Length: 590
Image (cartoon, rainbow, N blue to C red; front, side, top):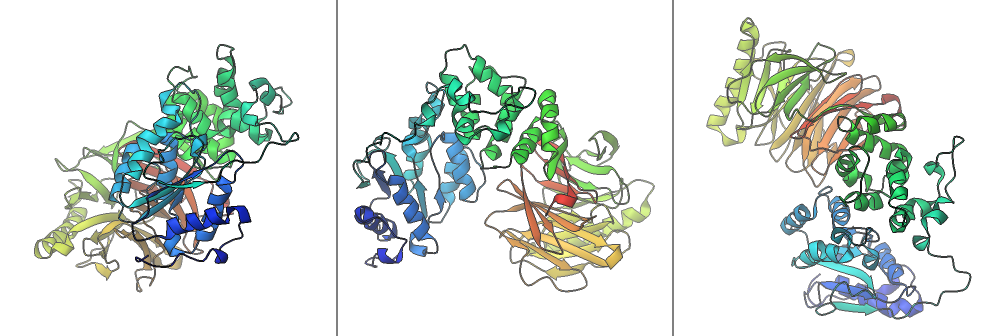
């Protein structure tokens, strides 16, 4: 908005009670001002029941489609700590769940003028109340105040009568006193005792709490009530030892409780929960998905919890198969023509194969000295192209395989020579043809993608100008039944493109996002071709190529390498290890 531009007409917004219209005009005028004359912080104050949350909800509803008042994130602060607040805000801004320190760094580099809404800051914080990390003041000091110091960020924050943020230097909207509670008003479930809330939870036929049928107030507040009781922690221990409660109870309350090292927990629950918490707190309402996430975090870490959660996790459309956290992965790919074999290259350059069903080591291959592979395109288990972190293609071949040596050496020499002549020809991505057939897909800094067959000699590749930005990831899929070769590529601008190699690239991307695609993989499955795209915001998108349907799988680990088999085994590799998930293909898009 330019200096002197008119405030949007409140009459064009959703209806607002007469007693709040003046506050609505003030909030709208503050948000629409682009002159920089008004304060960057707007505090919405007032007593309980005065309509503070309703005012912010009205503004959010009316701001949709209004460029001058666009809200970039709305974080409901009730029950949140600095960590859980940062995860939610990071997701909404497109960064993925980040720690408070990493979030502050990302927001400071974000060039957008950002507008945030923060309802219910006065209800933030969690129990144990004496834990500094759970206090509302810690959220304010560690996150909100540093955010509000950034010149390109503005926020409207509901604080009630708490005084959590200073009024000096802020625009104030004060809604005054709220309504008086009527005799018939329901009691606040947050003040109920553990016994009162436990009495509302149904039980199974064998006497166990049936958390799947528990009322929402019990799921939300029973852990806090247990922490307030004076029973030497028996109630808390019973909840933390119950997998049903872990799958259904308040994820934010569990996160805050497990952050307190003074509270004893069964097995490796604290470590498992910490790994899964950023996704468990992302409003995954489906208990099967929560169980799948917690089960995935437990595999390879807590055997007992893994087995407890396995039956519920396997009801979901994906579930963890195995984990090798001790194997940091730089590159991976299915071995063409060999079932149950996965090729891996670790961060030190060691190349190995493993069994796809178990993750057990199945063999080793020599690698160039000092190589640091970031991607691989295999011809077979012993011959492949590696892309080194320096941008150089390296052929790896067995001594008794001169044909592979000649073909792979020719491809590496072709791109090495091109890079010497033109900086735009520097290789930035390498992908393979998946489990069905050997291909190498080479992407470069200028946005070109080059397709090589690794089964038949080519003097030059099929080359296509696909992107305007450097290519970051590539994959290929040959479908013999339809005589199709589909190629996929991602670029630095957040686009993912698809084309059939006998034709031209599609005119529009398969997907375009405000973050980076870090890895691609594709396979021809029983339900048709599937493309997997890993993103820098901790999401993995699974595309049904022919129909365009998509499902999102949350990532618990940083992903720089992907592989997918026709049977629906998905492999995620990166600096935190190698992990396998089993997709239920028949229910993936139903």
